[in-house]
Image 1 (cartoon, rainbow, N blue to C red):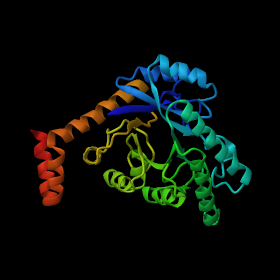
Image 2 (tube, helix red, strand yellow):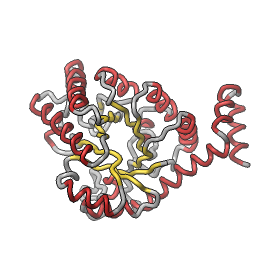
Image 3 (tube, helix red, strand yellow):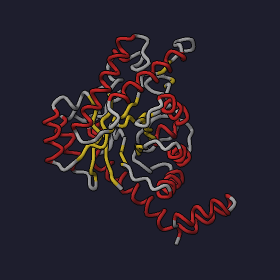
Amino acid sequence: MRFAAGLWIFSSCLDRFCTKGYREETTLEKRIELAAKVKDLKGVEICHPGETKNLDEVKRLLRSHKLEVAMVGLDVYSTPKWALGSFSSPKKEIREEAVKLAKDAMDVSVELGCRRVSLWLGQDGFDYPFQVNYTHAWDWLVEGIRRCADHDQRVTLFLEYKLKEPRTHCFISDVGKCLLLAELVERKNVGITIDVGHALMAQENLAESFSLVHRSKREIHLHFNDAYRYWDDDMIAGSIHFWEYLELMSWLQRLRYDGWYSLDMYPYREDPVKACEQSIRNLKWYAELVEKIGVERIFEAIESKSVEDIIEFLRESLRK
């Protein structure tokens, strides 16, 4: 298991009620330094353009702390110009800027030895009925992402879905729409990011979502956290949904997932290093539980037993 974490975990972690953050703001150097303190953490996710302005310095910091880049995230959501969308903005000049920025992020990912770029288009959506032309918006999404995919076929673009926030309705809101968009783009270098909290918000079953994306043959990236389903709480991974996590880990082992186990959390009131370490311990623990029960035994039970018998089987297997 290869573990990574988004550098935002080690930021001040502000929200709309505590707008200066729950901790002092940290420099890029400090965020990387904190990430390096997390036991078993091998990679980080870094945001473009905010954290990639001096690539020589970024590479020096990563080398000195023996970390690699697991993903370059595209920031097309954190400034007012993106308020009405990025790739689907009604303004052509904004759409063009989003495409250019994404292409730049792809170039940065190559220079950082990553070749993976995350597209979480949080501002692309709507808030009210009659606010947008859905046909135009989806046409622009498809066109823009296709242009980016064609920019460098060595780089995989990962589409990340989320039900809502900051918009009340995000266009790429669930695993089905995310897969549809990837298919409409018609490029092999378009993958999918499944974020646990986003999947839970969309009332998805984690294991089913993973199996669907795996079935599509598209590359998969995973963001681990936990949430109570009605909001993107970004809590310590595996801290709330025990059975859903256990089932997901069963499918990850069954289908031989070998990608990053990347943490995407906002530990507002927790120590970020400790929150990451507890998340990693939880993920390892779930993997150990699956190995203890036996992947083959789990799937034999799924095929041959009633749900009552499966519950009994799992409980007794874990008790031993």
